[in-house]
Image (tube, rainbow, N blue to C red; front, top):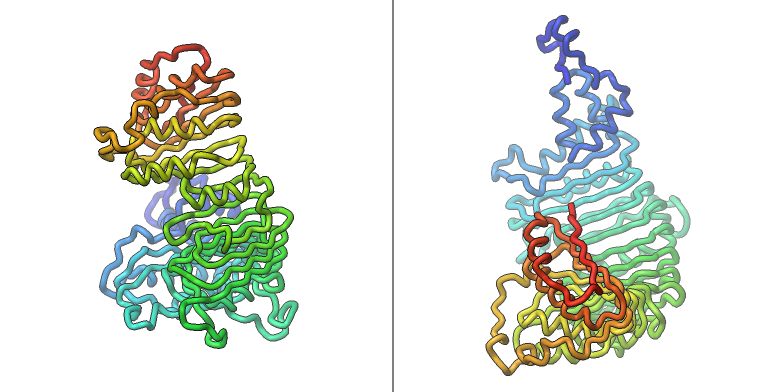
Length: 515
């Protein structure tokens, strides 16, 4: 690419090395700049020539990613100042003094932690740009500020989300600032309070404090008529002053939406009260909650995932899902009491997604055996091994014994399997150390046709699993295709697998290179 002729290049040099890229029409140059990693890279093209100085300011995307930037303690050069400068430069480049009226994406990502307080009026100015000029996606990630008055209860301040009528997707990660929703101007839109987001299809709110009544109103059908996906993760739900609560943290939340198809919700702290969901078109529901639950989605609910922990276990007496007893397309559970209870509610699923976290100790292993003794009937079994502090082979064999009638098995290993000491290997007290539990007897794989080992975990564990499956091949009723995915160099994995000698021709092993 040539340089600016006004910067000293002679006529002969320009003829010898013509700047053909700068001669392209603006819409093609915009398409080139959009493909760069971020707006900062696009702005750097200004040094190429006078023509390029204005091109980047007309792009419909502003992407400012400073998550890896060092933040100096001095005022000059602070990341928020650079955000302000970038927005001002973009506005100045249009010749109108305002940001382009056709922004398709505005993304501002700051470091997770900051030593400097981020003023709420500055955040408000960034959101004002979105409200006025965005017709597409908004993504804002704010830092947790150590110097903010959070210890004395004043918090990190409130963030007021203005009305964004043309935004189609909004994602806000607020590091536990309080999110409030601005009311539309009087008389704007339909209904008493008007329409918040006419075009919004996806709303994601993470690490935020929310007032229950604010959230209920914001996502209602009258304010958000096109909302399809709502994700509210690790939120702290605050009770309004006029709710008349009892002060023990109980706060009810009611989500009512005629258009909602996908809902994910998780609380950052133990939360009492009740969550009520009325969404006749809801298809996907993911939850990590402690409160009582009632989901009314009688017709279309097809995917349920329950993220379990000691405080977030599923309890059929407190958590009511309208389609209990019906077949699901996908059920995601843990290999624990909560997972067992949900599998009893949905005993037939197309795909069962089972997460295994197996801690050390005889009681832990016995609970694992108990809770996975009967799995929901499924066509696809996905087993995610997150952590195993016991022998891997007996745990895997136990699950294989539950695979009768399963045509497709997917196994996802974890890097956390590496380096764990297994005291059970030298202790006869744990069932995983018993010789009979390492044999392939009682493994009935009458319907199995395909096994996929996903691209996770080390080469040795993948080879160990393939070796185990080859031992089980005597139990295959059909020829089984085994695919092993691997993102690193496949030579080592291939050599280890080629060294395995299957006892028959019932397996076909393929190593798949992942990019």
